[in-house]
Length: 332
Image (cartoon, rainbow, N blue to C red; front, side, top):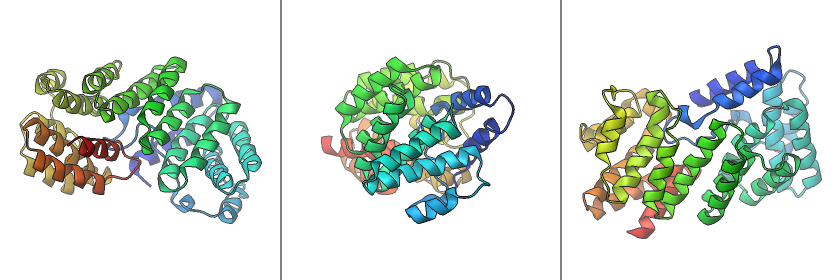
């Protein structure tokens, strides 16, 4: 299991096991923020246990029959079974599992569903994922997390206009800054994929509000830099200003050092392939994308095309870099 997800799972496990669980769960939800994610991973990251990937309904039934599952783990497995039941055409049974999630994890079930469904959609049946999310929204109308998850699935389908409408709704219904920042971040990605680079840069800039750590600021800063490069605006100046004297050492900070001209392309590629944090976060995916952005800044379309093709090959279809690389290749 990915280390970042393991920490999220631990946070939720703690939240549902301590006294005053509802309050603790709300705090856990608010801590699941795109501001702390690893670059190249989705702001709302899937949390699928290894033994649940591709599990049959019989296997899921056996797992869920155990009385030893934590409330959070049970909710995760219920979300997966709800999706599998929808794939089998058993929508009424799928709806029952979603309702059960609400009983098991009342303050966070929708966040769990929004985390698992986009990954399941990327590796299988996107129509089933959308049906499951539609059913969830009938139980919790207007929920920002569920709406953002719908937008993610439509972005996998390259239906960016529809995703934009959903994200507008998600931001309007956001109940806290975390929801709002996540919706803004995805809206920035939508604008980028549509070639609206100035609008994308503005969205990424907006998501910086309230972020204080370097780790929290890096994802929007790097994407804003890419958008400004594509808009043929000054990109290095704002990046240098916002990073100040930060030590750009730990991954993914070397990407920022490269974009500022402080690291060679070769050195970035070495860091992406050798640093432990980079290997855990599929650093070769992100590095190829930003190497492509720098090549486009310099007008080297041949190099850019090569790196964008590498991005497509290295990044999974649920990755924002995969989406953006595909969109950029169409414009070259």
